Amino acid sequence: MKSIMLRNNRLTMYTMLPLLILMIGCAGPPANNPLLNNARDNYKAAYNDEKIVRLAPVELKEAEEALAKSTKLWESKADKTQVNHYAYLAEKKTMIARETALMKAAEQEISDGETERQQVMLDVRRADAQRSEQRANSALEDAQRERLAASEAREGAETARLSAEESRLKSEELAKKVRELEARPTDRGLVLTLGDVLFDFGQATLKTGSMQSTDQLAKFLKEYPERNILIEGFTDSIGSEAFNQSLSAQRAENVKNALMSKGIQSDRIRTFGYGTQHPVASNATEEGRRQNRRVEVVISDQDGVIKARTGPN
Amino acid sequence: MIVGVSFIAACASTNPPTQQLTETRMVIERAEQDGAQEYAPLELRDAGIKLQQAREAVDAENYKKAIRLLEHARVDAELAQVKAVSAKSQEAAAELKESIRILKEELERKNK
Image (spheres, rainbow over the protein chains, first blue to last red):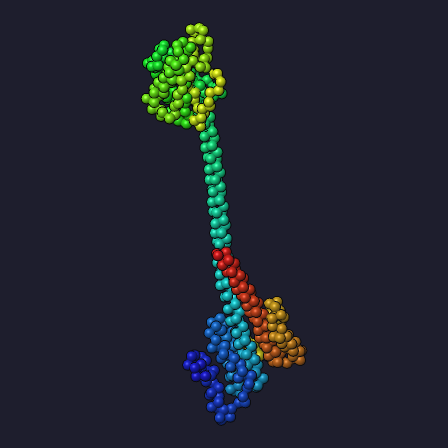
């Protein structure tokens, strides 16, 4: 009771009144009115509720006015019906104030909540947007990765095509080179015939004019390092078998030396002298003999292998 | 104001409180419209009974009693109305709170 009085002056009026009345009551107090007492207690409780004071000031004021009337009537010992009437109004108006405060608080909650809900919905949408952006990004990354893979595959195919093209060109080039060397394909491989024009009669030394032929052959061997050669020497039937054998071997050996002097490794070149064997023409005529005096160069396959000579050429 | 007016009216109770009857009836109707039948049936019933009693008092030309009853009926109806609106507002606030909670859960899931 004291704390209430200290808290508010206006309230003091109502709290003091019954005290005054109580004092007067000593000289003959009005009969205690439970309805009024109850209304007053409820009003005080509402008045001490900060929320009700703040949210339902008008309703609380009306309750206060009804309570004041009831109290005044009671003090002046008015008709009990009248006292009760205003006590009832005060009671109900206090309840209205209390309910109004609850209603206002709920309305405020709705208003705040609506703002919050919109914020959260915005956050949800933002999260959605973020997620779909992430999904889009990862899809984009996937697409880029796939594109890259496809492009690499394409490049791979292109490389393969180029390498096929290259090897095709290479073999074409080889064929061209072989043509330049005037080599002819045989079942032993490519065979190049260096005619007797390279050598003087009965001599093994290469003529200076033959340098061009050996140049071309050396160049060919440098370009195709996987290929080896077999140099075979042949003579016509004039002279002894031993002489011709030796001469043919010497001629082949000299061609080998010429190639080695142009940078071809000796292990890529084998030589053999056949003497009068394997004539390509009749030794009965000068023309035939000229054709038989020759050096043949057999070019290996790309594994460096040369098939052995079988039977007469 | 209303209390003051009715107080004056109560003093000068030589005429039937026709205006107050109409007003009280309207307050009761408004309370019904706001859902008092569902949310504050007792208060609404009190108001209705007192309005009826007030009419009977008017018929008996007991205007003082009629005015008192009308004032009670009116405050009962006002309480019924505010109770109904308050209850509905509180329900709406609770629903909103729940929807926010669900949204926040959803947000949390999405942010994971």
